[in-house]
Image (cartoon, rainbow, N blue to C red; front, side, top):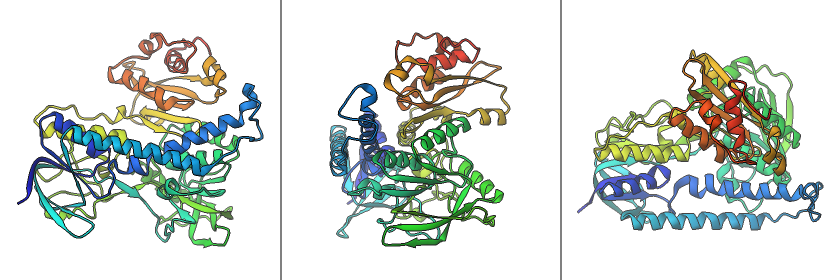
Length: 506
């Protein structure tokens, strides 16, 4: 006889384990089904967490190399600091293991029953859990939450071999790193790994079909990041496509031919980027479009590895959605409403599987709204303009809401305030004076439409702006709020004051 629950969740990433806890708090009996032997999904095991652990090593390595600038004589500008990748990878694995153990503890604490195996629909409210040994059991639930997430998206005609043609999954599992790498795509994943590999000492080339890196961000942010990357010795090739048929594997690595992208290819890439949600690298840097390339400026690139970073695809193939009325859009994303209900009554979906920003923190909030709705609560739908977008390259990038360009396209009369980190004492103290904070404001209502920043620690600091927008704060209110001195947070107050020309230190 099938075990029965109020809620069955398929997937244990942020869109799974976080709403499982909230559902338990609301008095629901909860089962969570995970096909892997570990909990936490992509973010915890092969995504956000291991990547950021390696980026922390990269940041510290950069600091050591700059030691002489700060009076530390055991370092120096020529890179006297030694680097042991195996130890860095070992620390990364320990961080992941500790956090995975924490998720398991939270499941026990909240009486969430965990089932290991592939979950699929037998009926809309009946789930089969098939284990690796072929054995299966069935669960029944009043409600089901699909949280199966996403996987690395590959390119037509290009196979990831996990050695010379790699993805982010391979990079975080690798025992070593490539000493030279071509990165196809410059969304968050592409620029994070470009930054990391560069700090490790790799020769890095970024290939992007659109006219700027991080194309989902404000153009001024993209321009500043590209400038900083090139100052660090990276080669950034925008408006560029690669020919997949030209890819050759050699004893030393790979070669691939690139050329200038045609206007048609750029336009198609821009349309795809917007369709993918504007974050994470939706445009196809291999130019696999219906347009013909102009063929100008051809060049053959060579490196130890080709890193594919063009975004992700939803994971739905094992769900047997045909047993339900759940609908997918043309990109394979589950269709949902503002409460994350699918077309099948009692079946919800959240996280990467529904598309959007493909961000772990958004996924968790989506899942919470879904289970609160199931429980008869009255949750407030998630405002996409309040979702922070964070990229952990060096310098960091963070934003929320509308860019200046988007705001004007939507018909707003816009006011803008900017403040550079070079005018901030704490930034100079830390030796991180590059970058700036930008505030976009509706001139009619004086409400914040968005904030965009590139610079030190702004992935943490952006939360101040998100909260200001949440409570409908004005730039003046954000500016007159007292910010401790000397801190990096002062940049947000000064940028807000700059909207009306009132910045003090610039």
